Image 1 (tube, helix red, strand yellow):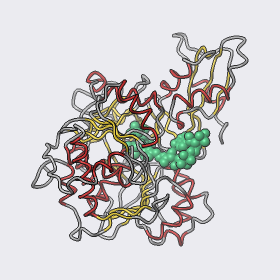
Image 2 (image 1 turned 90 degrees about the horizontal axis):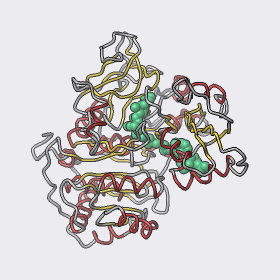
Image 3 (image 1 turned 135 degrees about the vertical axis):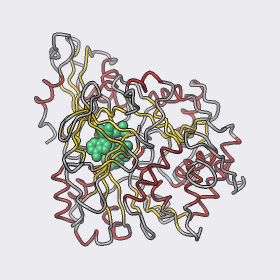
Amino acid sequence: MQNGKSGNLYHLIESRFPADMQARFITLMDGPRQGIWYNYADLVSISARFAHAMAALGVKRGDRVAVQVEKSAENLFLYLATLRLGAVYLPLNSAYQKGEIAYFLEDSGPALFVCRPEDEAEMVALAARCGVPAVATLGIAADGSLPDMAIDLSPEFDTVPMDADDLAAILYTSGTTGRSKGAMTSHGNLASNALALHRLWGFRAGDVLLHALPIFHVHGLFVATNTTLLNGGSMLFLSRFDPDRVVALLGQATVMMGVPTFYTRLLGHPGFTRDKVAHMRLFISGSAPLLADTHREFSERTGHAILERYGMTEGGMITSNPLEGDRVPGTVGFPLPGVELRIAGEKGEVLGTDHVGSIEFKGPNLFKGYWRKPEKTAEDMRPDGFFITGDVGRIDARGYLHIVGRAKDLIISGGLNVYPKEVEMVLDGLDGVVESAVIGLPHPDFGEAVAAIIQKRPGRDDVTEAALIAQVRDLLASFKVPKRIWFVDELPRNQMGKVQKALLRPQHQDTFR
Ligand code: MCA
Ligand code: AMP
């Protein structure tokens, strides 16, 4: 139990509210509602109303609430309302297409699906097919059926007491087999991570977070939001990362969190100068590798050493460079307090300093397993409770973790994960395609970009790069769509018949550079 009331994360958040509830929590910094803000009293009353509305729609403790909406303050209040109700928050990338959504709804069996007002007709039909009993809508102008219903309901709600081990959220993360797995995260997982990061990154009175990340992933939802909430602090909220807006707002902020693409784009912005960051205390990077060169260039330009940390959906944040002390470029720092980290060999044997092996961890941040997939959970766990991250690294003599690669076949593009298998399954299903091989290639903006090599049926001149890309766009979220496709007569294979991607990558390595 994190405080007197219960293990519900909202109870912990509540215990950290500012003394003056009129203090601002969030100010909208772009879009049609630019300039609108909400204070902590609003946070309490709106989340209470939303909790009542969801209860009226039939949501009970332990039920899943699936959400695919655009980024807004109300979206955060919906997250908090779900916690207060003791239900399980299940955010979905706003770029997911209908076919992708259908899988998540079928797999998670939510009691309620909250979607964009403009998608309502389509999503009501989809939800009905997937057996979801209720649908509500939430738009970017505080519009939609959920706020409409909530407006007349009580601004007070008795937050449901929860145990720290009870589920707070499920976030889907793709797998090497191509099908996404729901990572079950408990109230205790989120609380331990938020408390550790709040302390480790020195959050203090007066901190203002510049929030430009999406809020359907761990980074923007939990890391950025929960630390701000535990600080009783304030955030400047952008609907998306726009370098012009970010440069203009840095003078009002003290902390920013971003994926490496944010930092390379800022460095490419002529207005991003040392005087613009004079008010800033801390820049944090994660979700994908930050090139040591970017780290150094950023330091030279701004005088700030970016603090790089490492995490994953199954563990929240795992390691971090220090606030005080060396933030070493190309490393992700030390395990968070309470987290045990090791480098292991193939059989799980612990390897010593500077030996490269599998990165494994356990601790209060470790998730509760994959939703309804105990066999998948077991595959990734060692008998002594360590989780096999699928990342490969080494720990140096000073204790810093270096990530040197991935054992999992994963592409990280602009901080978003793409599993080649999922894209290959879609490509292989298209008319005229015999087989595809999807690879990640170095990309100056996204870090890695998705590309595909395809063997098509003989004589199918109509199967062109543009035609295939157009079809994939309807089936997959846009960040998963290959940015280039090449055709070959035959894919290279090893003796077992497996496609040798290692032979394909070098041929196209410089495509985007
Ligand atoms: C957009 N596009 C992309 C990506 N984003 N392509 C590849 N990778 C991407 N990440 C495509 C769009 O489909 C579109 O293509 C074109 O780029 C422009 O789209 P737009 O929406 O304008 O892009 P953007 O707004 O500039 O977005 C790029 C972005 C964004 C700022 C890098 O993707 C972003 O905010 N990424 C952060 C993701 C994140 O929060 N990850 C944390 C995961 P077209 O024109 O062809 O349609 S949590 C995690 O990983 C763990 C736990 C951790 O450690 O944090
Ligand atoms: P996700 O599945 O979206 O939670 O992404 C987690 C993965 O992102 C990790 O397993 C790593 O491969 C990668 N990742 C996160 N932070 C970093 C980082 N700082 N450096 C390199 N890779 C990272």
